[in-house]
Length: 488
Ligand code: AHR
Image (cartoon, rainbow, N blue to C red; front, top):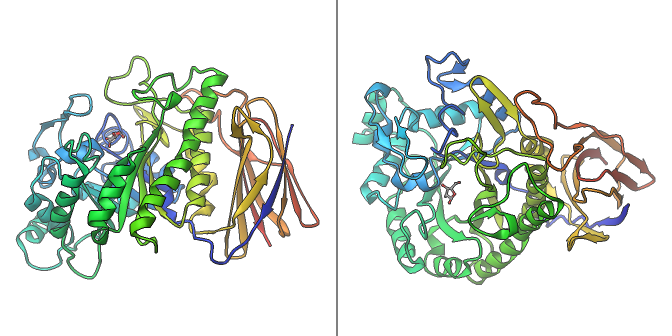
């Protein structure tokens, strides 16, 4: 049994956890959009305006703050004009990046905004720098947001939408160092400045602009972008996937793994902390006031695809190990809330570390889904810095804890990464009442949900706590995640 001592250091200047840290990403990739979200108006699968009801209803429970679309690598080959107008006459194109399948463009701009409306979330659109012209990007923004008489706004009206929509965030290219054009940072910085100039603001709503940021440890990219273009951006992105032994290409398996591989993946997840510290340090040199957010708009586990699934569709199962990866990421993002203003897990449905998986009319919630659900009260809470003293396992702290405060309540989440031993945590926390306590754990490290047993891994009430005098005592079973809401 690991014994952990924790002390809280409330600080009214501590940062607020931006709700956008709980953001999502949906790309035209595999069965992420088609089948996963969009089934079309004539489908036998129950849908609202073509969007499947079961999936949207499940996602709504997560209070999703923001959704990034249409890619990913797909974004730099996406030509938005192919995806508006009558669906039956939309252009059918080849999805070169993902599985070489035909993209019928039935899910386009109008359908994306409908999805965001149904989810009640903000919009984050990624524009095409790699293979699209400045004019194309500029016209897309005009189409979506212009309230006046103008060629693109008129076309939007002809296509059935009177009022402009609101773009909250606009990404100027994706992975411009790789699939988005293999550019050098110096070249992209100039391209960013040029394209961004024509992302015009129409009407009263300003658009926050996100520049394409670094791949994992590429600190030079961050330095060049900040030096040459920080005045023109609201956010700079960072992509980092959790890979076995931190090595590309993905190896291992989502469900068949050893204890050593359990720790390898958790170690790779914890490496996010070091990445954020180092990228933030570079950003601080040019932006000491932290005006520019670090936007981790692709993160999550990436394993080889499930056997007998289509190559390039990136379909993987999701176990208790993935749930711990998500929980550890959130604790890291919380700690760095002063700089990290958004994070978007890759991806929302049927792709990589997904929230839900579908098979025909069937749908299941993954263990990762449940982390988003039990952590959701952290959104918008003020961070309460916490210091932990306790043992390590395999070179990693056995436990991780995060506390936020909002409207007279604390939300506390704790993770015990040890697959064999429990952990006790005593926290000096002046709380009076536990209003809700839940635990997510399972018998095996690789426990997961299947279409036969969709509720095998799900949170249940947590009873392993006591509140005495000013201390909260938690008794965490091995490999578990606990969420406790308290009032003080
Ligand atoms: O999420 C899958 C892919 O990973 C995205 O398309 C790309 O941006 C990244 O390399």
